[in-house]
Length: 283
Length: 263
Image (tube, rainbow over all chains, first blue to last red; front, side):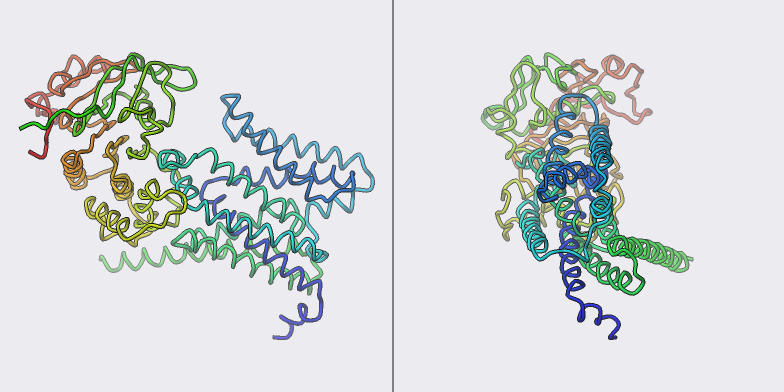
């Protein structure tokens, strides 16, 4: 079993990566649950990619990329709300418009600077093996904030999953809690992009939660299972990265995706066996 | 002996309803008292759901006045239960039946108030009344459409509201479930609640105190036996609907609506 533990026992950067990845897993497990249940994948995707111009501008200005990412996310959420309110267009259209606009702006900024090639890879795919103690601390704080928000807002969030109208008539402002949920998604994206990158944070939001949705019978257990799948994916992904010299972020997300497909196949096999057993029982 | 008249539950006067300035139905005039029920009948897009959403405060009136228990609809929300027509992600939600029905108590307990033993008793009783007590620990997504509809009706019951607003509540219900549902309506009226239902079931409308025929305008409003006639149904639906028993709608033979179904 030494080959499993040795990489972590003998390398501090691997331990840091594991801690950072575990925090991302918990964050994405909680937030991803609501993304999957409310069908918010498109806005999650758009936020994950739309933070690019903010990060690029922040790097140009010499300020932390996380600040630029937060500003980008806020602009996107505000813009989506504004377009939806001021037009008869669906939120999908508003999300799509801002998604491509922000991505295009980000690519233009990046393409104008020759010093960006290394940074771009870092932005897109993260740098979990080089994560700093300060970044881990920030991630831990964000994880606590997200968990506390999820606990306090559990009732309106559950009602939003059933129908925004039910939330409204139960005395909870559906618009307010929808935006709180979007802010949670934005925080998860902003805080996680340093670890797994903007391209891959979306995978960590969807794959573990998607697998957990097929396994869980309660929403809290879905969050727990999703977080555990994420943590296992981080652990296995880091080992794969260590031994095969693969890029760490993509390895983690690929493992999470493999887990999703294994669960999907397993559930389908289970259903087929159950239906066959019932058919035999009835004749 | 009839009970003394109480203040109206719903008062609509010169009411126009619709979305973002686009009027769907105008000049609505009606009053609904305690223990009375109103059925809204009309084609798809006739304004039934729009009126229900206006009654629960989801959309504001375009013109005229509307009061629920003497207040604007939003302020009366805590005394109102609403069963909407669509529930978006029931096929994937990892929730037990008990959890979904318990959501009916959230309005009473707010954001963080703990659900206590009384709440759990109310939830259990609501499930019993809709005959889904045996489904208590079943995942919602494992249920049929009709069973899910009974769960959502039980959730509305758990609100213990003074006014029930139900949008096509019998959609997907089989004959047995409809009977259970009808009994629940009678019990709610006896308890003192008032009910407004959007329905395509003419028989169900006949069981209500009043019926309103809608076709983006009010075709008729009044007692079922006066309103549900072949002529007015033709004006509402644009097709001839016979009312004989052969057509399965045995309606015009009935003499009275039901002011006091518990008597």
